[in-house]
Picture 1 (cartoon, rainbow, N blue to C red):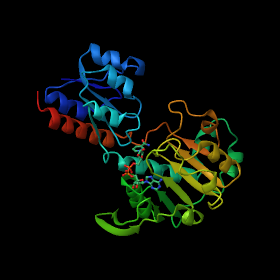
Picture 2 (picture 1 turned 90 degrees about the vertical axis):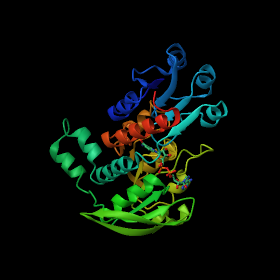
Picture 3 (picture 1 turned 60 degrees about the vertical axis):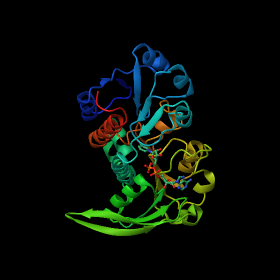
Picture 4 (picture 1 turned 120 degrees about the vertical axis):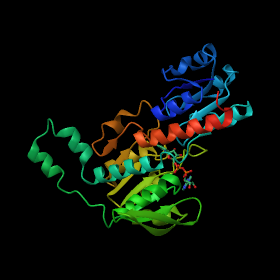
Length: 317
Ligand code: NAD
């Protein structure tokens, strides 16, 4: 059975699949040539991350396709319901990358607090003394309040790190529940109870930092727009490693320019892979190219989980 891992697969995942008798192709096929390659090469399984899309047209054009696997969480690049209706199995690996995304966000929060993104860009050509003055008003994370909007797998993992560095955490979710967050300290695990709030508006004014971890909303709406920015504490710092558009990009730029938002980190963009230039060049925005899950550890877990799911479904060859 032939598998096309069009956005790559970890060495471990490939090795497990090959040992079970599958052929794994990792030569990237351009999006427009995907259906042709699947049909011509007799590929029955297509694995993607976030770059390759598997839409209705590809599913219709590939009658031999049996399974589409998404290494990661969000399946907004696959027409899942349509594929399943046509008898194509769709799988993903929801938990494998939570810790990696949470660690990226912690990096972003530290970076935003000390102007690192701007400093990294300007040290080579800027004036040392001027830059030293520009970055003189950094802030500490410890003792500050982090609002985590969307308290699922990634939100909870982030809470564990944030609590570990001494931040207070306010969890906001559409569902109300209480959960024990494990915080690892040396060889001990301390459990911290966190109860989610369901009314975002009532807590926005208390937050020094905000990180958003909701999926792309079914109706496409932004969870944070100018209405929410108006209720935030002046000087709030924000991170979005969820999906482009869950924070309205135009409203974000306005909130940065008006000083409501001191700095923002974006790992995801509305128009990937061609984000708006005014976001990329903004001195108060720290950008990364959708790398939340891009760690060796997460990719190994993803590869292993995909391999196990595929072997579980189709057996050893
Ligand atoms: P999850 O399903 O475990 O958690 C999402 C949470 O958001 C749920 O608890 C849900 O109730 C809540 N929610 C949804 N809409 C909401 C709203 N409008 N207001 C408040 N809460 C809301 O998902 P997860 O595993 O934590 O992943 C979250 C998202 O992160 C994914 O959907 C994906 O888009 C994104 N992600 C990004 C990367 C990256 O590389 N940057 C990697 C993995 C996942």
